[in-house]
Image (cartoon, rainbow, N blue to C red):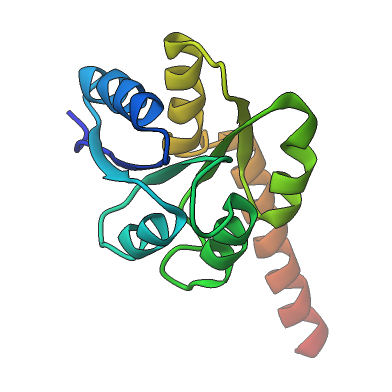
Length: 148
């Protein structure tokens, strides 16, 4: 069994944060709740954070700036960052560094599916990796034969 994944929920809306936290806990995730942009940034520095789910309407530091700051922090830059936003605002969050933007009205199953996509390691493509290895070996042998 894989270790339990930890997700930060950065959301000022108490009801939405409660609902998201319940969905994630019932799916087996450990949840850290942060009620503002500043608290989200502070908790993102905690060790063991696997994903950040940020509401675009988070209070304090605006969500765009939270995204930008997380992307320049060495300990945070590789943590998947998903933003809950209205349909017309998605582009700005991608530009700020979000890995995915999800509609704020997302249903439970769709949210869990999107989280899983970003928490799962990328599939290992054996054919692609063998071709890359074969090319590297060929290049090394060619370099040796040219120099000797």
